[in-house]
Image (cartoon, rainbow, N blue to C red):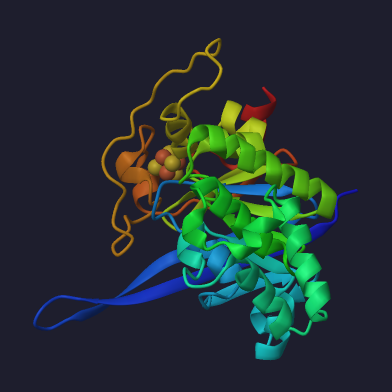
Length: 332
Ligand code: SF4
């Protein structure tokens, strides 16, 4: 039986920006709006969607690198959003992040050894000798020689820097890693090596990943379940294979149609995405996808569809599906 590690319930994160000259007006961007999902222990859960849909903000909100405005985030049953500074510092050891651009997260004036050792010193996690050994062991675990400890970030390739980013994320033996586009800046051949490394570490350490990516092929390879996001909301979620092979939401269908298929024996009707992603400053009324949806109906322009369950493992937010209709359609 799967054990739930992370539960996100109705998460909301808004940003305010001022626009206009000479009399600026304050606008609220609902970057993450009523988002709910869970991640089991040892599982990789994917978040996909076009750039600007709010998936990275979800990762940062869970870690409280940005402060959410509403909802609940439970890690091992404890609400992260109600924690004070001290509790949060402790909890953050269990939740780490891997960034898309590891170089920007590494101090160019420090050796890799210092970068990795410093947080362990700050948290008094061992003697000088123990910390030195831990750094060497971590470097070897991510496929680097212990000599790397004496080098500076600029001396490494993109793939090696991401390995260092992964080593840093492992410093405190976390339970959950938020991987924010961890391989999208890497060459395809390097991507598969880094993904294989992360899979190996997941098994060894029983890690859970919240895997954020715009690349459906990478998510299909790495994750067991996935949520599709559009303008701050989850429009569909379920097991990866079901969502990608038999998408329910019109946006998921178009997104899948726009992705290359790795298997040449499979064919797919190419669907075109009409129009641009609307501005999150002024999202369309009703279903946010309605100006681009090939199946739009009158109700879609007036009312946001609530999320309904299809079977035991899937949810979709679309007026094409009602509780009865959706269940009937999926069983026929
Ligand atoms: Fe399209 Fe309407 Fe479904 Fe939105 S609710 S995805 S506009 S059919």
